[in-house]
Image (cartoon, rainbow, N blue to C red; front, side, top):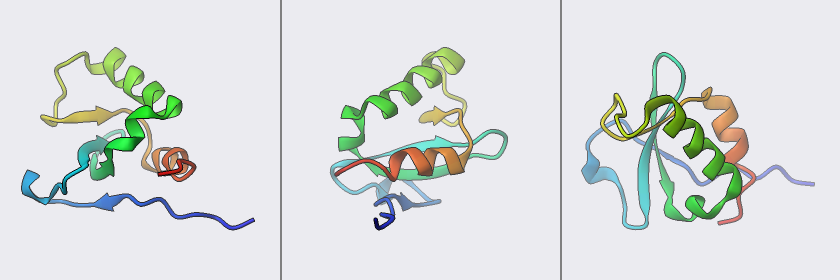
Length: 85
């Protein structure tokens, strides 16, 4: 069985770097990293669980100005690498 690398695009600059059909999230505890991910992730139940955790922790007031996912980066990558896009 092959391990599939997720199609996540890491970016560290402006919102102009977000291609059509994608959105940016900030991931991590402490220092956050910005990920640009496909909007198709929104339909994944495990991603919806991550969004629920974000809502519980931050409500609609995200400190980074965008959606902040409060989990370690390696866990986020592990979860999203299982998605079929």
